[in-house]
Image (cartoon, rainbow, N blue to C red; front, side, top):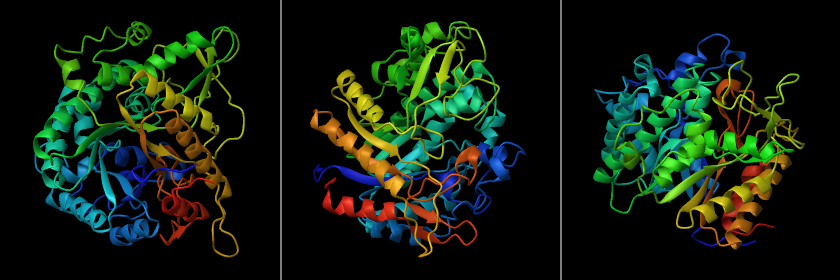
Length: 461
């Protein structure tokens, strides 16, 4: 399978997961600093204080990207590093760091793809209500303008949000992510204010960045496999919560009727103001799609314990407000170290469905990858054949989709480096480059060498 020259191969990271330097050069605290320092919230008490120390090892990491032949690098910008209190005074040292990052990418002929929000909300804004209040969306737009003015002459692609589903539902409903709240109404309010932030930020960026810049948002769209007689009704409900509340307003200008119906027992959505949907529905050049696994669902019959194997961490609270009668059934093996099933067909089905539903919307796989319990062999190398196989099979799915005429323009492997995996701390390794957390030494795994070879040859064997 041959990928054309214009198809982009890249890799991705996120600021809190790799940067470290959490209290240096004027950076303010984020909700993930607070959450990770709260006993019992993160496995082993791990924090992102040091992480991969990318902040101090920037040049070496840029050289590593060049050695691997990456054509693009998707990174996120830490809002509290730019505006420590979320609004107000701008921290020039933070802007300087990302300016050096972007300059380093451009000098190495690697396309910069900047994500403005990958979950590290300034703690000061959470203290005011976080994503449950409209003022956070307004502050985000002001932050977007500051970053756009500083970097907009060099950044190729701007992504507003990464996986707002996680920010809203895992952060405010199930509580397994920062800020750790378990309030269904707060989660749905956060959904809307994240959507609003996306639209407001795009309006600001368009005024200050270069004319040929591209604009994007990245969604972790879910693939649900219905099981049994009630499976389709279960799928409809959770699809409305996972996918409809973002695709509807962003690409169609309305919240779907199913989304409003499923959540009607929690809210009447009166926090949506006149004009909001017009703001949210901004034209985007590329829709980013993050994909890892699929779910199996059916309605719970009320007997026995309701199965909740949705893959998003254990909590007594739900990540699916309004769908408490949906069961998430265990998936068939094989599974990754996250317990997520390996189902490349799910990626193919998702991309084809999106291509049929939005035929004029270009797509990009902005995250795909796998955690495995990597072992350092006697030769000092990491022979991660399982990860290589995972990526190969999912790229084959992408090639199949492109052959069907769907406009998929690139693939970003998650992740470049082993890193802080949120509530799992440092116990899960997604990187194609191993990080020794004692020495911070980087060691490219076999999967990195395979990926570099693929980028050169553009041929999938």
